[in-house]
Structures are given as structure tokens and as C-alpha cells.
Length: 85
Image 1 (cartoon, rainbow, N blue to C red):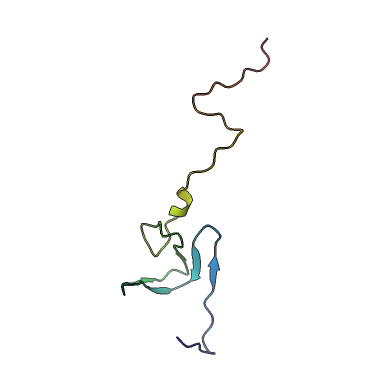
Image 2 (image 1 turned 45 degrees about the vertical axis):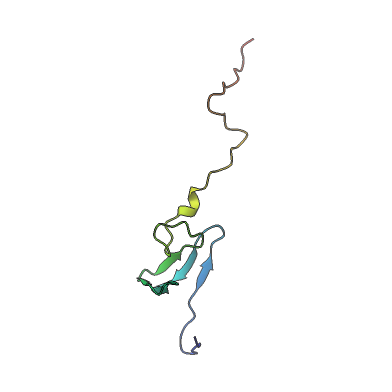
């Protein structure tokens, strides 16, 4: 691949814990030679490989279990009664 001075650079934004955002349109060549094309102005490419639409992001990276917070009641646990006594 060679660069060209008359061609504008393509912007790629790396989203921490998320996809790569690429200014489109884009043509993606997969390892098996399959070519996928998307003509959107910004294309989200999957970086976690969980997407059902790989190589495009379907937000599967968001489906991780969230850590339980101490302030949330545990299911099946009685909440404390305040003001009785």
C-alpha cells in the first residue's frame, strides 16, 4: 500500500472498550478474502469479535455483566425497616 499526497487521510477513532469508528464509506477485506462494503458516513468496526455482524459492530461489547454495586439490594434479601422500634 502506498500513500498519495493528493488523497485525504481517513480518520479512525479508537473507542476504549468499544469499536473502531472509521470515516466511510469503507471496503473491508476479511482474512478469507471476503469483501464487505459499507457506504455510511461513519462505520463502526468490531474490535471485540463478539459481533453477530462482524466485521461491523452491533454493540455486543455492551452486553457484559455489570459488577454488583453495594448500594443495590440483593434479590431475596429483606430491606432494613427504618423508624420502627
